[in-house]
Every structure is written in C-alpha cells, then in structure tokens.
Length: 439
Image 1 (tube, one colour):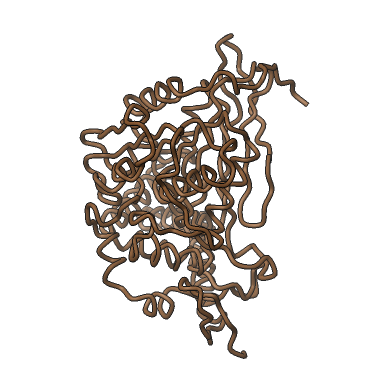
Image 2 (spheres, rainbow, N blue to C red):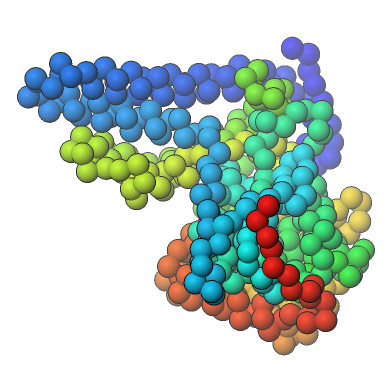
C-alpha cells in the first residue's frame, strides 16, 4: 500500500504507512470469541447433556451464552428503547425519533412526543464523542422528556463513514453544534455532557461573534474539561505524558475492508474498549464470572442489571483519527479553550464575546474523569457575561456518571437544571404552542 497523507492535529500533512491488517486482526479476534461462545452455548445445551450431573456442563453453556452476547454487542449500536412517555393528562404518548438535521458524521435527532402540546423548554443535549454512542445518555433523555422538547446529537461510527466524506476534527465538531443551533433557533437550551462541554462553549462564543441571533438561551456544562489543567486526573496526566507521535503510532489504525469506511484512519472502538476495561479489569472480570454463575443457575434475564449495563458499555464506536488527536493536542495538551486561543475555520473564538447566554456548570465531588475545578473554570473565562447570569453546582458524593444519569442527576441536578432553564427563557422568542399529531 502506498503512503497516504493525513492531516494531523497540528494541521500539517503526515505520511502514514498504516495498513488495514491490525484493524482486521482485532475484528477477527472479536468474531472468533463470539463464535466460540455461540458454539459452547449450542453444544452444551443438547438434551443429552441433561443426563450428566457434572455442573461444568451448565457452567460451560452459561459461559458460552455470556461470551457470545458480550462480543456480539461490541459492534452493535444500541437502540434508544424509548417508546412512550406519560403526559400531564395521564396518557401514554408515543415517542417518534425523528431526524431533524442529517449530516455525514452525525445527525440532530428529536424525540417527538406525539399528541402532546409542545413543551416550552427546548433542550439540545450535546452527547460525547468519546467511544460510546449517544445512547449512553438514554436515561438523561428519559428524565427530561416529560418536561422538555428533547433534541440530541447522534454521532455516527467513523468505520461506517466513507473516506470521501473528508475529515472530522474538533473544529468540525464545533461547527456541527453551530449548525444544529441555527436550525433549532434562539429559544434553545443547551446541555453539554462531559467531553463536548468545551466545544459547546466554543460554539456559543462563535455564534456570539458571527450570528448572535442564533445563540441559545442558556448553556449548562456538565462534568466537562473546560480547563484540564485546573484539577489533574489520570486522564489529564495521560494527555500530558504521551506524545502525539506515540498516539499516532500506537492507537491510530485504518478501517478494514468489512466496513463502508474502509481505509479511514480511526481510533478503533475495540481498542478504546480494551483501555476502558483495563482501568478496572478486576471489577469487570468479577462481573463476567458472576453473570456466568447466574446464567447457569437460571437466575439471569435478558434485561437484568448486568445485561442492561454491559449492552451499553460494550457497544463502542470508532472515532476519526483527526478528532481524537486534535482533542488530545488542542483541548488537553495546549489547553486552547482554557487559554482562550481556540480557532475555528481560521477565526479566533473569544469566550469573552458571550454576553447574554446564561451559563451553569455542574461538577461531581468524586468525579475522577473530569475533576471538580475543570468545568467551573468556564465561569472565569466569561468576562463579558454578568455575574447574575452565571451559576455553578458541586454535587457532594457524585462520580462522573452520576451527575448526568445516576441518582444525583435524578434527585438533585435535574431539578436545578430545569430551574436554571426556566429562569433564562426569553418569552418573546418562543414559538406558538401546537399539539403534535401521530403520522
């Protein structure tokens, strides 16, 4: 294969000799384990084995079932599984998931609650592009649906995007948010969760300078690395210690022939998953072993707690190489957002240009991914925003997941976010209320 040019995070062309072999080896390993699991499950489920009193027969069949399910889920995009929502009228209203804006690397989708008067709170959830699908925010969506019109960024798996669609880096991500906000209009309230928080802040500042009328009413930043240097964690330590050359050499691969994006340079989902699991390998190994025992005893179910968690956790997506590399270099290493020197399409994005968008930060006291201090740093950067339009909340005892989907979100943070949204509605810009009909 001839060397190909790739636009690195620094904008300079870099030669790559990467083949598709390593990507296909990982996929082959996954398929082999899925096949081994399916074979063990089928073989040791024969009626003849029912005559055996050896417990290893049931244990082997159970191991096969858990193994097959685990490795099969790694390449499946989870369903939203949001079919209805209970309205104030006590009725179950069907939910239609509709694409509002369709783009190559991600869509803007709307959870349209049929037969219900349109809610005044219009919320754009900006989902992370950090290895998992937007369905990671399913419980967040479910909790907001009764009270809001909910839209979300539904990012696509890079392995399924043809090379001809071009690149996608942090600037493109920011411009996608800008386009989505222009489509939704100024009466929108943005909630950015984790990784996209700095880019959502940048997108708002970009609109403040380029298209003020398209700015959202409010911006809630939840557990995001606005200033990764404000409170070091393992994530930020890794970003500082590894070089860009090492990252390109060891984690970037080229999509294999099996997928539409064959030849695209990506940070593979399977490789990301291996890193996720390695961070807590003992916990995951125990969970796997416990589930095997539960299946062998007949105590497991298709939607039990283990399967609900791992069906989502194991479902990973490839990120474009340029997005991953530019995130590490520009957000974590160079801290361009934190230093207010970030540029989009050759234009400097000045956070100080935000003057009339209310901003709230939410952090978890026990967050070990985006530690307290990283997100609230945004408020100091908003030099043009009055203090009465700034707010922050530190949730005691909450970890990273809890501040947007766990008990802390449901009981404490969600009500605070809705109060913040209500306090920053521009009533004159709301659209007329209408009742949506089922098609």
